[in-house]
Length: 475
Ligand code: NAI
Image (cartoon, rainbow, N blue to C red; front, top):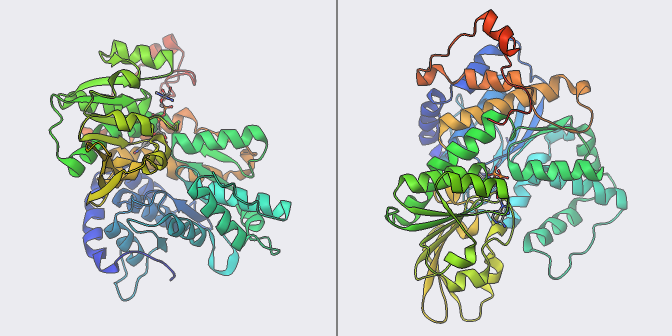
């Protein structure tokens, strides 16, 4: 088996944590049981690009239990949990000397070159007959396949402009080496039946490609299942934003002034958590609806410029870029904590920060750095500006990820087994499946659901067994 992880000897530790996680992931375990015999993913060759954590290990082993062949990478250079990666490679029945699990190419602290090399490895199936499905988080695997196929069609890879981001130059270099007359990327693209996308940012990329007419295969937007974005993005971040801050700095949050940029699903979870710790929370927004929500939830809403010099903690949650600029950071108070929990690292202008003349970066510990300005004051930047909950802590806990990943498995089954029902486009799962995912998680929390009577169901115009809400309902 080909794979590349940090240290296979961590597999036993990883396996013990996977066993604990399985108990907290009732949705995934129920799906495993439901499809144990029928194996709807037999023949699926799934390339996954999603944070290689313990929770993801349970997802991978669920896909395998349903019959799929899988190869995996992390979708961020800092988010891999090395014991999880090792355990997945060794597998439940293998040993360190005789691994029998799934090929994983991921370790914590990859360089960007290594990151894209890993993505290429997971997309390169031995024997060349796969993958036929992608499970993506943020859209990097989908992007590589699309750009490779586009440049093969054009017959050349364009040169990078000097002011292009470093990462884009790395991608172009990789494609220059791999775009070929054998049409490696075109062949991969032609085999793929579809992609299921995990996050807001990746979904945004998919809709853009679809609108531009460049999307090469159908996609299911897993993010916008209610049981994904209204749970993982919100309650997951409500848990893991604090975990990231605590593990990175252990600063007392109570009494501090915290600024949350963006009040979407992630921002709502972060603001709630910081308030729960006793911080005085200030929100920034560009959308009047979200700004009004924040105000009516009791938060001060203002522009960053007004509070940049007085706040203690900054968290960006926008999925947008250049939210905190180098100029903002220069004005912050001594030891202000600057962090991002959105998908990509460009919410904070790290490149601009590094270019300030005389600035000195010092590592406190991995993923925690002070940046000292020429006037002697410093700021503390978490995870080099990448998502701090996965860079500095272990991301979302199992229970909430069980909701997200049950949607992922159902979406993979949909696209793989009903390919002809999904012409190229971007789809969300039907509501009855969303309700099914929620239902699978009720028992574990001791929830007793009220039964609708037939007369009540008729009165509000829904079937007794659901779905209970129209598609436009917003929760
Ligand atoms: P969303 O679209 O619900 O929320 C983003 C909010 O930011 C919107 O309300 C938007 O109006 C606001 N915004 C945009 N530009 C802004 C600006 N310049 N200043 C202030 N506010 C601005 O998106 P969601 O679901 O909250 O996701 C946000 C990001 O977090 C995405 O990149 C997503 O992929 C990522 N994500 C990260 C997770 C993690 O574990 N770290 C989990 C889930 C999502």
